[in-house]
Amino acid sequence: MSRIGKKPINLPQNINITIIENNVQIQGPKGELSYKIPKLIQIKQDTKNNKLFLYKTEDNKEAQKLHGLCRTLINNMIIGVSQGFEKKLQIQGVGYRSQLDGDNLLLNVGYSHTVIVKPPKNIILEVENNTSITIKGIQKEQVGEIAAQIRRIRPPEPYKGKGIRYLNETINLKVGKSGK
Image (tube, rainbow, N blue to C red):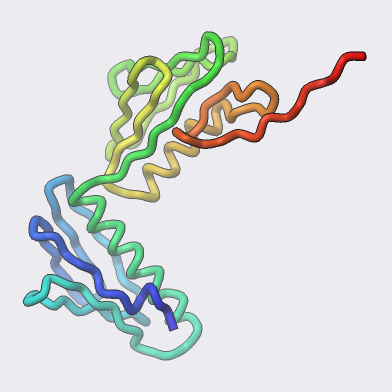
């Protein structure tokens, strides 16, 4: 029994959903996404109340796993095409900077060379104050993956906290060597 899968998905007014067999296409002001639903899951749209419902076609363990997953993925798609997703990164360290060159992100984070990050076509990168990076897009998974890739270039080190971190991420700093 998936508690998440049982919840109906509320549809905003500015979203168009077309369900053809096992394919769901969602169109909104930010873009368009599609998803192929597994055969163990069935989707029904209640146009009167603007809600989507997902049902299991079989009652086995595999269908239970997919029930909540499909509901969450479709809900994230609806949020993505209506509002969008964003992640913010912060750069800390003396001389660490970032800047945009067209669509590419240029990072100076303590290496002997400038690191260039080329985002996919659905991702928008913004830089504020040379130390804040905002990643925006309509696919939650893709936004999170790009943010993780940028953070992986120079993760925060545990002694001074220098590096690229998520906004409001806390780093547990270690105590350095103590002199005698």
